[in-house]
Amino acid sequence: MPAIPIQQPQIQLRIQDVQKSFQSKSGPVHVLDGLTFDVHEQDFVSIIGPSGCGKSTIFNVIAGLLQADSGSLIYRGEPVKSLRGRIGYMMQKDLLFPWRTVLDNVLLGLKVRGVDMKEATDTAREYLSTFGLSGFEKSYPQTLSGGMRQRVALIRTLVMDPDILLLDEPFSALDYQTRLYLESVLLEAVETFKKTVILVTHDIDEAVALSKRVVALSGRPTKVKGVHSIDIERSTPVEARAHKNFSEYFNLLCSELDIQTKKPGVHA
Amino acid sequence: MSKVQDAATSAALTTAVLQAPSRHPSKHLRAWLETGLGTSLLQFVAVAVFFLCWEVATELGWLSEFLMGKPSGIWARFVSSLMDGSLLINTGYTLWEAVLGFVIGTALGTVMGLSLWYSKWVEQLVGPFIAAINSVPKIALAPIVLLWFGTGLLSKVVLVVSMTAIVALIAAHQAAKDADKDLQALMFSMGGNKHQIFFGVVVPASLPAILATFRINVGFGLVGAVVGEFISSKYGLGNMIYTASSLFELNTVWVGLFMLMLVGFILYHAIDALERVALPWRTDGGRPHLQM
Image (cartoon, rainbow over all chains, first blue to last red; front, side, top):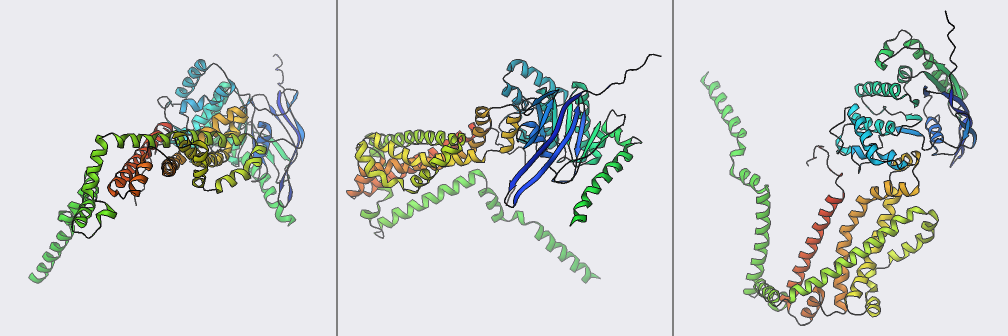
């Protein structure tokens, strides 16, 4: 029997000792307190934590929308300022441009990058039909449903072929059915296109159902509380929720967050 | 027993009567008047009655024809000035002054207002000056403008530009400041530079607010043109009104005023059409209309 080589996961992005404070009227607010965690190649990492713990701040630092006070980002072994231009960013708000048609919204990132528009248009149409949106190319976002709009936003993110998808509670504004559907669409797309995903969510259920690993954060000033591998064989998020280990992980993460939610009370 | 039946019958009758209010003639009339045709007809009737009352009142001597004019006289003056071509020339002049000044002033102001988005420093530098200029009633500049730019077309256009540019500037500046920050952040994270964010987000996001000021500015265009003509001019509706009123030709004054009204009306609807063409994405998107 030949020895199966143990695959050591390749680190794609290392967030190392990132500090960030904001100035407020009542003095500086220390948000990120030396945050460190790794993201592997083709990883699906969820970041969970109590509200206001600076989950979105991490994203803004990675995306280059904010400068960290100190610490570094190391991308495939090289220190980088940010991953601006290399990431696909998706938020709770679909952030579709109301004056652009569905097709033009999908093409936005490619236009910014300045690629050949004819080829890009063909790719975009292909994506739209894969995601069941053909026929809506010339529609304005205002005329679409919330789920459709978020699907367009997802296509816009994928079509840029980003190295890492940054998803900031992308489905939290949607109803449960649409949400389950889009979760499975996302998971399928990530598998197909071999993407790395960092997902910020307040929803432990979603984190367990989708992720390979979960990073749990403490309350402000925020540190990494723990990193958990989620060992669930899944092909769809619905299936994952039915897995025998699901509730175990769910409870584990719940208790980890619960400790944090009680903490301020203890100190007060 | 029969008493009970009687009561039941009368109750049923009452219900039947109450349930048939749509047969009532006044309801029918009301419904018809609320149709497009009915509304137009009602508007027409209101105008006709107004002029008729005016005509009769002057005829009976209740109103002074000398001071008020008279609809039949206004009509006669309208036809004669139309025939000799003077009305069209005057209207054309005023329209041209207003539109030219509006286009130049609005374009200038919009471009300046939007470009203030580019630099916080320039914005802070010119901010107080913008506020100061805005606080001067531009119409007060009219005598100087006439002095500097003569009695012809140029002085009126300059006057209109001075009135419209500042409005457009302030509106465009504010709209650019209000442009969706999240969309800008998204474009930035995609690697977009400042120019791409400006033309990709700031300008299109500002367009609705900018177009809304067009309505105000088109009105200012007419004000500037007419006031300029009042002060000194050879042609134009303002000239026509001013000259006629100093000669107590009230009917001519009214012809000028009604033409101004018509021009303003047309310009307003032209802006409407422009808005529909420029902002095709601003549809109701199948949302129900709230009727109150």
